[in-house]
Amino acid sequence: MKRILLVFLLSAAVLPMIGAKQPLTEVERLERAVKRTPGEMDLWCALVEAQLVAGDTIGAEQNLSYSLKMAETACLYMQKAGIYAARQDIFSAARFAAYAVKAGQRPNEDSVIFYIDSLSSGGVMLCMKRLANEDRKNASLWHGLGQMCCLYGDTASALPYFETAFLLGDSTAGTMVTQIKASMAQTEVRELIAEIPYTYQDEQMELRCKLNGLSMRMVLDSTATQSSISGVETMFMLKNNYLTKEDIHENTAVVIKHLELTEAVRLENVRFKYVAGQEEPGILCLRDLERLGRVRINENKRVIEITR
Image (tube, rainbow, N blue to C red; front, side, top):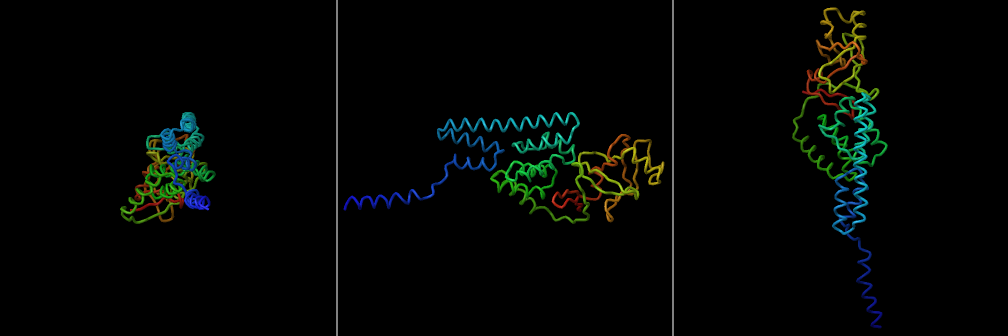
């Protein structure tokens, strides 16, 4: 009878402990984190360190090898992007730069990723969006999209990207969400005076405009320091009375008296650089748009917002 009672008491004490949910160890927590965000190099390093502290040298070595492989992959993609950029194959460069972000590379103001994105009028961002839609659980892509938006000064568009990355387990994205929300709360309310629609064609941002009444496709180039017009388009406008000889200055500049961006938005006397061999009919730089007010590209609505 005493033996039965002892067994009963031991069972009553031990069974709740067996059924109770044990707290995660640091290694288990990090293992789950890297599964959610496999491109996050900092998490892999933290996991290796935690395994070394726990005495698991075999697991640490395996994960270190994998993290090095991921880092090398991102580096190789960036080298590939650099090769294509040197060959002037900008859109192939944009594609490999996006692959580098997916593998864990983080864009910044001085990175080749940002340079190629600017050179390709948002080509890297477009490729990253396609990859993110295909691989929705890759936090590195969403974080990278948020960083690219921030580099262009568009924190409003960056916020949902960082929020998605945070939900996928990227803790650094959570810090960005907090900072952006705090900044937006302090930002003064600006009056929206115009919205200019744009589209992506061949991975370039395009506007439909009228130059002195002539409908034309214009590429918006965020890196250009001066708007430019092609020789073919200039000759067409001259022959069809959209330009006069007085509008052309020494074959180096063309003055467009009326540049209509929408029915309600117009720029007067815009000076375009004459580029005889330019493939695009016209390229518009942000500096000319900034004559209207503060410029912000709203990726979600696909409009350029002008505020004051």
